[in-house]
Length: 133
Image (cartoon, rainbow, N blue to C red):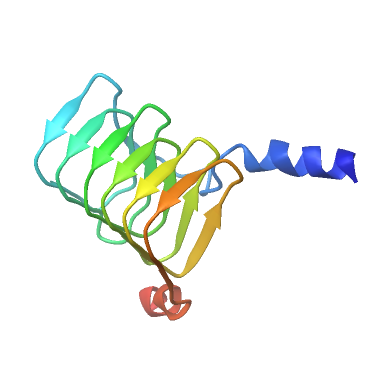
């Protein structure tokens, strides 16, 4: 059983959002105060203070990222730090080094061993079905 577990950990180390997709990216040296809106997938590696709304598209919070944001997106993968509420139409994934302090509302959730989460979770599988129509 030990071997099987280590294989699962190796696979789970990478965020699982469609690898063929292209993401806009805010680099690690960027610090933004204000609102971010858009209709494309986004990866943030820097510091953001302000709401983020991606019109149902995906957000990756990089391992060095620090967000003080209310987030509205399709799917969210958190490898860094988020302080604020997260609303996702699909899945929220908090990786082993990720941290969310705030309430979550999503269709599915994945929290890896070692991740930090403080808040409430509302899981509604109908969210992803409603988003498809």
